[in-house]
Image (cartoon, rainbow over all chains, first blue to last red; front, side, top):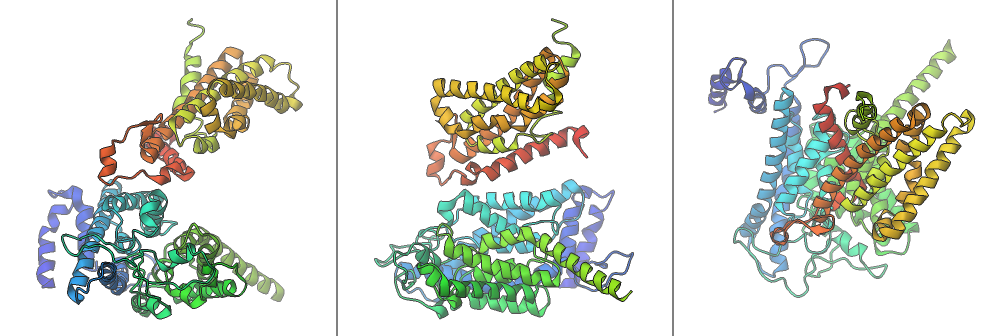
Length: 402
Length: 209
């Protein structure tokens, strides 16, 4: 199978090389070829490089595979929330298919727009196509509410790819996490489609499937949304039809929320894969959870008398986008701190800031996006000070002996 | 007339519109460009006000330039600018009250606009009144047209209106279109100014570093 593919690629290759018919599309061809096959060299010929079969396209594919559990669960959950809201029991497969059909258009739009811009940018620059969008394109559908209109996703993706990535020089040069810029754009440009009680659960039909009137006790708010608008300082959080839920419901993830963020369990499965393969840094991940837990614990003990401050610290970690951000967003090797000590500081601050925003700013029930974007700015500064502190320390040691 | 519009004065007038634009090339006056460009009307009024103030303060300082002691020149410049800003501000309050409310403090803050002090220091202190007047007009227009372009996109995409009139048809909203709230927020003005700079530099090779 792969042999035949290799032969086919080799056969059409001359068309794209200088002098060939389709010379202008060489970067597109190159992008597909290196996507299908590991190129013969993944490091430049000069200099001391470690040479192995892994290049950034392979790394990206590992991350995409790690996203799959959360994505598949998210699809099921979209269907589950729908049938729960309209009070029907549809069985596993129709529930999943409903979610699949709801999520698939978002994935197609995200990849279509993003890769389209990448290809055009590569053509203009005459460089090879950057692979960074493989992951970004999968992250974007997972961090938006299911009812986000497709044209908004298209605009936001285009904005993020152009202004957060291409203007900085493409993959690997961006300061901000591109997927989060997409979400931030949606959040500030179309707030009514990104927050509130009506966007998290689809109650209408999807390609003719499902659809119905929500049951009387229906409420579409997320748990963090309920907390942010709570009138008393101690409330029982509920699911979309009013049943009380707790830590394990949040951990399993059959709750309303952005498509891929709800299930901490599925996210941890992905985390295991990217940690095992060494793609992501366990230091960042662990310190985000530590920072969040500690900060939430501080608010539990000394915080203001609001429902969200009284929300138990362990619940903060499994509700909303906290786990998803910690595992897939904060660990982005391009935008996180690179020094080892810097990773601890970077992660810890993300966790702490996310909880601070959640608790102290009722306008933003979820703080993870803003916390990560905020720390993205500081990552180079953290690295700078870590490196300088090290230089100073070693200088001191060297001059003392002399 | 030929003396009034020689090649040099023409350059003084037209240079700031593009090649030497105060906002896109010198990157001055950005603060007010972010603050007043959410709607076209205040942006236009702001542009005109700044043009008038730069032009006339340039003339006054140019006339006084030989009598101003060097050590207190900034204070003299400030007094002149402050007087003109107050006149414009009072004028707007009297004849265009709604706009002056929208512009709020930003008319008063023209006094701190870097374009003004920049032109007074760099040009009016060492040139005659006619050239200084032309220079003020040129820089004012250069500032104004950027503001108007930015405000055009921000109002059109952010509110669906132009000069307050509905431009985006209701049918589009019914079809699911929404105004872009980010356009109303100042960061988007910065990005739009950046886009203008981008286009400008792509076209004018001289500006590329």
